[in-house]
Figure 1 (cartoon, rainbow, N blue to C red):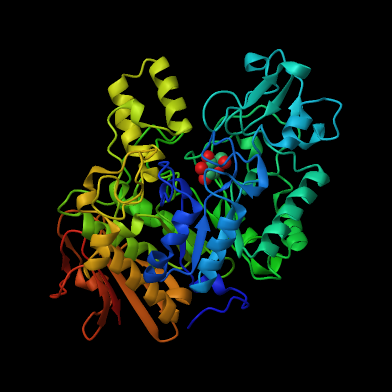
Figure 2: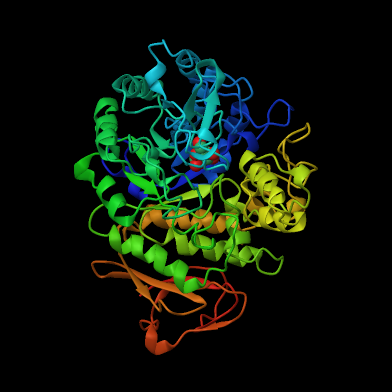
Length: 563
Ligand code: GLC
């Protein structure tokens, strides 16, 4: 069952691998990863068996938000290489049967993008390409309304030049484009067509559900349906979102050319996702929900106010998406990306005793759900959080803004550091660990973020050499998806939803039934034989531990049974 690039829905049996270019492989010793570095490591992806490489932004950028602030959509930043290097990467992927999906960041540009530079002149034809508004004396700070930016502080920046304010849902160096203006949309679609002509196979669309805003820009209640990424409500899921998505799809020929599209949509609901991913509507193939990565935050606060997540709550959340998108639409499946802490540290147990089994079990659970799985670089090695203990070690602007604000409010520095160590985006951004050498084989220079201390144990070279490694477990999961239709299409049904330790579910396609049993805890877990299907005569397709396969599961033991 190999997927054909020209067949509709090919991405349903695909696995996507995300590369964060800054941290993947440096080829020129400047301490920052680059395109030739990625190309030199493509055999790692080929060995893992993944079908798609999602490339986080490599466009020209002042790097305020590590490339999510773009100043030229049709060029590569010199830090990462050249357009020719990108062509070589695309060719290297295609030679290996891997497709390349670009990150598309079009909710905002950099403030150094020529469009924005021009728009600062109130008389310019580009003035209306962004959200320029006069201040309001009764609003906080005299801004146009009370919105806060997702990275902290007001969502408006005052520009002396015209004594007006512009909207930036993210940093002040990321002004929001005004999608109400058809010229903006045309410019975006033209740019996308240019990339398609260059050979890219799809787009991961950054915060795409923010492009349609409530044009009255009303004061918010500053409450978010999920708070991991916390823009004000008036910018989420606006009234013209689906119109814009359908228009983009049509104008770029996204569905027509079977390009993969995945929309990052904080605050999207199951109901909205079902509509947006209904193939008949030709909007998007799938969306990234934020619900499951916001469960560890106290409701009504922000991503920095932590709470424990009981397993039944996590299971129920994923199950609600499985059930909600069962008949119409399609899920994306992820634990990790460049904005999230490392899965094994967050949902697993990263102690030396349980790291490997818990990383494998988290992978099994995720990849056996229905949807397209995303693997973030290093996740396939069971890479752990950074373990930073000093504020000087952090680079991420969201983390640094939060630390400044929290310390300013009187939160003790140790407490701020404790929370950053759990939730900072830099946890995912430390260098990919290729071998046990000083910087994990990432660079011969000084890495922009230090390599994790456990690189002597956690690295690709060791993982590839060890048939029992997390890496080979991921490889087997990818293989299973490629060869077993039930993994792709099987109906999902939760089993033991209330069990506090065990994640269990079935996948059914015709007479084929798979049962996943996973102990998501560091203690043994007992499963009541009366509560699960009969396992006698079943075949174990994949397991973390060797036989015997008992109903008392060892810590982090998981198995996939074919009944
Ligand atoms: C998305 C990106 C994140 C970025 C933000 C603003 O959430 O994943 O890294 O900071 O959008 O572009």
